Image (cartoon, rainbow, N blue to C red; front, side, top):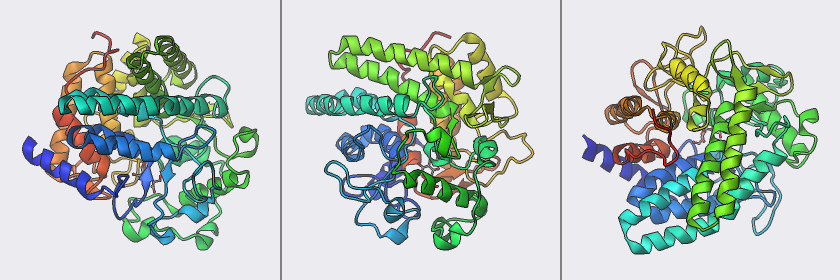
Length: 444
Ligand code: 9WN
């Protein structure tokens, strides 16, 4: 089974390569996406490390002067009509050496340091030249990764506690998650926006799987609001209708600091390595202080406009397991939640027992491989090797039986969404090849 799965995964990555970057899916997502690039690099590390670095390079070449890494880098060879909201809709002005309309103005979870570290670690398997290349790439990326973290922890520290806020659900990567429902209720839904701007996703995907028109009009409205002030973050909380601290985004922010500590160590930047570890620690403390609900004993998204935690129990609430300094009480709470009837292995995107659990709709029930990959890493970080192995086997089985789909039905395993999806293929390679544990993992 593993050779067959390996070959099919490698061939998805071959098909989706677009010259200097990978597309998540040829039909549905014909540009380059930020956190997809990180997941994809983790798999390319096995079959084509040169492309892993090239893809990360293309993404960071589009980094804004303020440090933000855009959530989409637009491919100028792809027509405006092929993806909505496309380049002209975002209207991003030229910056640095970048032409106008080259990217979006929002971000996605900063997983790239974790990916770069994994690609570097794998380089020795490909020979000395590859190791040399990997070191040079780390040198190039390091200041850019640091700038990304600085942007998120300063300009996006809207709550003042050291966490990054997302100002659009798309920034979470978990777009349509019930975690945003309470905060989104306060965002005006102007359905007339969808007559001005036509959804393109419904031409290529099933409407029963995708966000509703109501939610989509809110997504569009939020972009228009951020765009109106040229994507400035100054005083954002007082003039923008959506600002949320997400446990998954911030857990990845903390994990990035730990990966940066490892990268800084290899680059001989010992003092910086200590600073990154300290930052990871502070992010962990802030997640615990602000996003933990002692009643549910799991983490929830905080709406900064109302100061309340979302009642929804989503897979994003399990992600702080990625952080080794998470206190034992919180680790226990999240593990109990993970193993409960609400989630299980592989974990669905939302509480299976919730009345509005939806087996089909985007991030409201189906299983995604990327968040399960992160969950497995979290289990390894906390020394739960047996559970990590159980989850690994469940993911490999799912993808082997059903294919490299974008997401999967949480009961039947049926493949849903895009059929040859890059991160599913990339992470399948890593799941087949890598049983190692992060160096900073704790003992069980
Ligand atoms: C909007 C590309 C992206 C992923 C996100 C996923 C989906 C886009 C969309 O596809 O989002 O960014 O059009 O729905 O939710 O996680 O990065 O694969």
